[in-house]
Length: 631
Image (cartoon, rainbow, N blue to C red):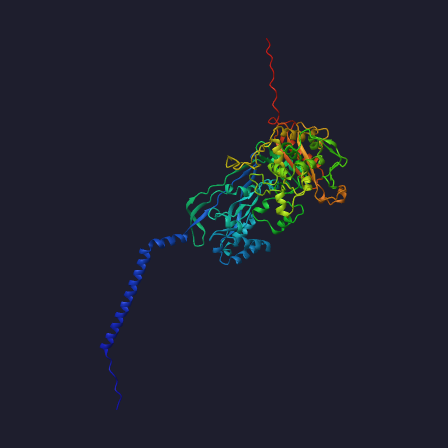
């Protein structure tokens, strides 16, 4: 039978197509409704949220770092300035593969591996997202042109103008003013990150560090509109920063130069104070260094040269140098002996050239091995007689000696605004027991009477102790800042004055210091030669290496750096002190012969005019002229 062919059911097919169209239409309607609902949710219900997100994509808040305060000397001469500099910055989030970008920068600027390592170190220290990090300062015109030509290959890299710290006096105030440097990781942890937004430098040493809060100021802000690449199109809103406060220091540029000239390139320190105010007039530590090297980042090679130098130019000898004070403390010991009742102005001892403790054979030698015979207190200071002060210290005892010397500032930080200052050491029974677990021996008291043994002091402490002799015990802490932001410096925690039982003991000590320079047997008579004013001073020479008993000091047998240090302290004019000076010359050997002339030159520079006479403000008042009325 032939095979039958089925007939198409058109009606059925039509119904199937119609159902599919209805289902498809329903799906389209549902999806359309869902899309409309989603659009309604996003554009109406979450309108404010997405508007904010959109604004954040094109509007950014950028910190505006404050201008750092300037630093001047007492005469208005600039010591620390801010000068414009073109810097190369990298925004890590916009740079993509920022390490590759750094490689390109090095290639474009034709730099070496040392710079490449420094760039990477700085980029890794970036603190805030999308904050440009300076990696190179003081770009030359050629370097700026090279960056501009290859800008398309350097995403996230820009050339920006910034103010950078500059020290016009260079090495002359490196140890007092200090310097700023890049903020490191440790400093970042203790800083107010908000206030330091956009700031990449902070005070590292000296006045720059001590007055960091006042010098820095307060950060400002800008709301800026940027394009897709992060480039600023316009500023929408600005809150200006508050600049840092200016500092006026008590230092004098001209006296500083005179002190450096007097030191003549020798290793040492000079400190000059104004006794009545405690203002530091000059502070010299030689050799020195150029602080500008540290502002934008010192090279590894240059830092190694400074840090490894045998002369230690980075070492602040004025504040951190510890030296036995030697005979420079004899006037203070003399005042202590008088006030404690151990001696009187008329007390005399016989000096055979040495001192011996009872029942001991050891001889503590006087510098004059032949002895000075009968010696009074004034002559003992003038001649710097060791034997007299050996006996005085022994009779006074370590407890009294420690109490009085501590009152003069030994063994403590004496300054108001010099954070680097070390306290030195004024030994005591308790100190030795804690340090060495040993009792105190009488012989240690004996040598302490001439500033030897465990005792160590800084040149600043010697200057302050000398200033206390000049002011008859009135304590005014040494300070560098005359005013901060126009407000005079005030000591919030003044030290108590030294109150003696009889004020005339001050005059005994002061008269003895004058005899050192102007007395017939004074050890520093050459220092006062032809001086148009009276000087009160005291020399000191301290050993660097020990010499066996019975042996004589022979400079030819010693390495130059093993020779004695030379010290000298003084104030002038003696009857109306205007300046107190402490000088230390490392391995200078003679306090009166080497350090003394340095002190004289410094005092002359401060007190005398070009005509060689006392400046009018320092000259003693003239007696009123007697006018006879003619009848």
